[in-house]
Amino acid sequence: MNRSDVRREAGATPAHVGSRPVWAEIDLGAVRHNASLLGRVAAPGALCAVVKADGYGHGAIAVARAALEGGASWLAVATPEEGVQLLDAGIAAPVLVLSEPPPEAMVDVVGRGLTLTLYSQRAIHAAGLASTRAGVVTDVHVKVDTGMHRVGAAAAELLEVVQAVVAEPSLRFAALWTHFPVADGVEDEDRSFTEAQIRSLGEARDLLARAGHAPPMLHAANSAGALAYPAARLDMARCGIALYGVPPFPVVDPVVARVMDGTGARALRPVLSLRAKVTLVRRLDAHERPSYGRLYGLEAPSTVATVPLGYADGVPRRYFTLGGTVLVGGRRRPLAGMVTMDQIVVDCGPGDDVAVGDDVVLIGEQGSESLTAPQWAEVLGTISHEVFCGIGPRVPRVVVDREGQG
Ligand SMILES: *Cc1c(COP(=O)(O)O)cnc(C)c1O
Image 1: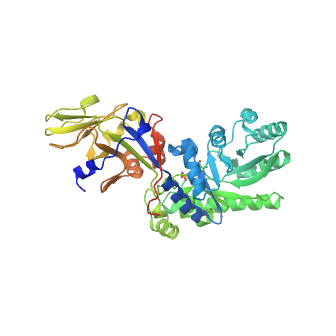
Image 2: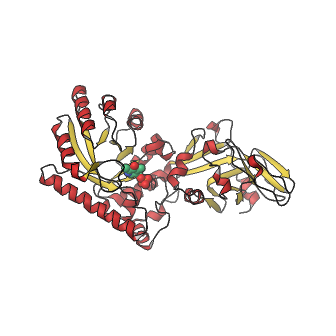
Image 3: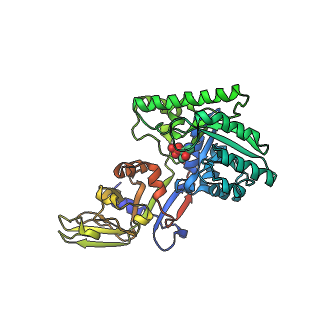
C-alpha cells in the first residue's frame, strides 16, 4: 500500500473526540479475545482482569465489562476508589483491592462489597471493627511476601496475621496470595527466583493448613507468571498487560516461547491504538531547526507536519531525543524536534505530499507498518505498562468493537 492509498483510507475523526483530532481507540473485541485466551491459560483456575489505573489507561469500566464477557470472573484494582467505581457502574463480579488500605480508611472502605487484601495487624483490626459496625462480612485475601518486598506479611508473621483475620467474626479468610517481581525475566536467576517463590507460597499454605486455616484459594501469577509458569496458575491468575494485548516479556526466551506457544499466547491482540491527524504542514529550508531548543537540523529542504499531542498526552520529551518515530502516510517518520507539551513536529522528508487532515498513528497500524507499545517501551527504556499509563486524561478514549480474526 503506498502513501496516497493510506491517505485515501483516512477515516473521519470520531464524532465525540472534540476539537482536537487526537484519540486513543480501544478495541473491546480485542479485550474479549485476550480474556478468552487468558481464561483458557488460567483454567481450571479463574482469570482476574487487572483494571487498576483506569484499566492501564484504556478505560476501566469498558475493559472490565469486555473482560468479563470474554471469560474473566474476577477484577482487581489498586485502590478502593477504583473498585467502587466499577461496582457503581453495576458490575457484579468480585473486585479485589491489591493493596491494604490504611486502618483509618476502613470505615469508608468496608460495606462496599470489595474484597480486601490485608497483611498487617492494625489494618485487620480496623477492618474487623468497621465490618462489625456496618453489619457486613468482608472477604479478605491475605498477601504474603515471598520476595517482592513491597507489600505483604513476612513469612514469619503470616500465621499470626491469618489468626488475626480468623479471630475477627466479621472477616472471612478467603485466600492467600503473593506477587512476582521477575516472572517476566528471562535469565536463569529470574526463573529460579520465581520458582522459589512458588515453593514458598506452597510452604505458607501448608503451614496454615497445619494450623487449621487452610486458605480456600491460592493465587500468585501476573501475566508473565500465568504464561511462563504453569505451576503459578493455581486458583486464579491476575492478568493485566496481556489482557491489553501485550506479551509481558521484553525478549521471549526459548523456555517461555515454548510455554507461550502451548497456550496460544502469541495470538494476543493489541487493544489500544493512539491516533491523531496532521493539523499544519510547512515546507522548510535546509538548516531550519524546529521546536524548543532548536535541536534538530534539517539537512535538506523538508516537509514538517505538526501533530496536536505532546508530553501532557503521553509522548515523553525523550521520545524525540531517543529517536522515536510516528507513522504518517504508512511510513515511520522521525520527530523534527523536541516534543512540546501539546504538539509534536514530524519530519516527513523532502517533497512529501503530506497534508492537513492526514492520519497519524503513534501506536497501532497504518498500511503495512505498525508501531507497538513494546516498541515505544524499547525506545523509552521502560515497559508497555508505563507507556499506556502515560496517555493522559486529555486524550479521549474511543471505544470500538472489532470482531477480528478470532
Ligand atoms: C498490576 C498487578 C498485576 C498485573 O500485572 P501484569 O504484569 O500487568 O499482568 C498482578 N498482580 C498485582 C499485585 C499487580 O499489582
